[in-house]
Length: 296
Image (spheres, rainbow, N blue to C red):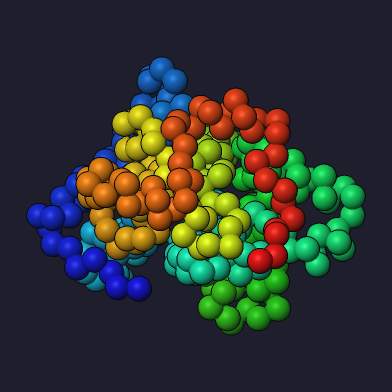
């Protein structure tokens, strides 16, 4: 994948986003007991930090990815080690494999062979995870345990890169939580809960951004939503446009879609939606898809 060769001027919106997320994080924590609904603000800030990390993964704001990775590395939202997220997300961008179980790292689908080996309880749990309620309540927990399982497995090779990345992340998270508690006087349980809800909010965006289809172009959604959510997700709601232009800066995507909307809509098989609220009405208690992946 070729990274965007940006410069300070053209990448100014991304620099502003990076500055804002760390600045607002510090301000809210510094005044946590004085700001009304500070915990809610923190949830949005941690969600926004995930969007900033996603933008940085794709080669912004500098032409030097080591510098970019340094800017994104702090695990403010606790859950995912940045380098693990980076590796899995770039693999996710192999569009030919989108939604394929055990190939696409971000797929929630299960292969037919694996499905038949699951207990009825596990099948029911997988079906619940395909509802919006299930994804928002248990999705972050599922991801948390998957990462801890990966850490546990890496203990077998304590000198491996995997172990070093995962262990260092755990160590930094502990230091970060202690710092937040001792310096800002924000209890670590409160912060963990905010991080949990931030991860859940991100899962609103990703809930149905991919569907199984024999045509890879028909697997990524175009979500048309209102401006604040577009900024919160750094225009990743135009997900098909992003997949077709993974190195395009976030602030250029709406214009790209506006100029070529007919082409993109036809190309992705009109896999479109207007507003995340519709997902709450349609899929809060109803599975969006069968978790058993249809083999093509």
